[in-house]
Image (cartoon, rainbow, N blue to C red; front, side):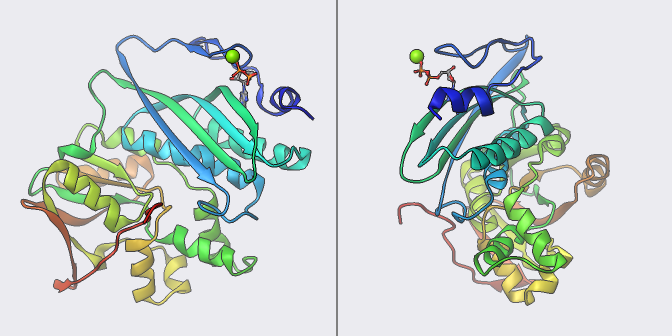
Length: 317
Ligand code: ADP
Ligand code: MG
């Protein structure tokens, strides 16, 4: 099967989006942005053996490649629209491609994202790059840099599950319900696209949690030129994580483990306002700390200073 056969068979689908003027098949794709909207572009590469275990199912690899980009789009409070796919494979195995395309399109379909082009190449390992373009009302994007002292720091969902799920995967096939839940949190992250749009009008800053809570909050605070304090007891941990790990380990998974793809945002709004939006969105939003002036991120445990050192995930350390 040559690359054109691969594209035709697995990736070239009909789409009904009238803003896609030219999709797969020409030298470039042509899309038309909606009037009064700004374009947001994100890109993320996932590499076999680096970002996911090489035996992760092809459907999960496809899903995840899209989901990590949807999460970046959510963090900008933008609506995802069109994506391109650069796929590097060692060999063209129909069952692998079938599963991969199914996972990829299931994530794309959940958010009405259309695949408009890509590149297919041969290489030693599976490398998947998805580039995603979205739209946001002119000037209404949510940035990392808007947090001010005395804003509250919130996170969506529960934190630490993905890292626990990855270690379950690495130690064999998950058997019990808790392990299956945690593995799924790693393999099929749910980008908070809708919740992000709902918080956009009162959030001052946001970042998605890909490299670990401690590192990522640090990036938001740095971009905003402020410091912050979080209380570790307030970090929302899932019952599945609590049953799988001792509290200490669960907290370490939450602070240092990446891949959760939840959102962290800051806001001057009251808890009532946030909880109302949380209920409307069907996504938990938990206040875990406060923004302060100065620099750095400090942790407390039951109100007492807790020294935590972590640099998150770095590719070239
Ligand atoms: P070119 O040589 O001009 O770069 P290609 O022959 O590589 O174009 O690709 C042909 C068409 O197929 C292009 O429209 C390209 O965007 C699309 N394409 C290539 N690979 C993929 C893929 N993995 N998924 C979706 N579209 C793809
Ligand atoms: Mg060309």
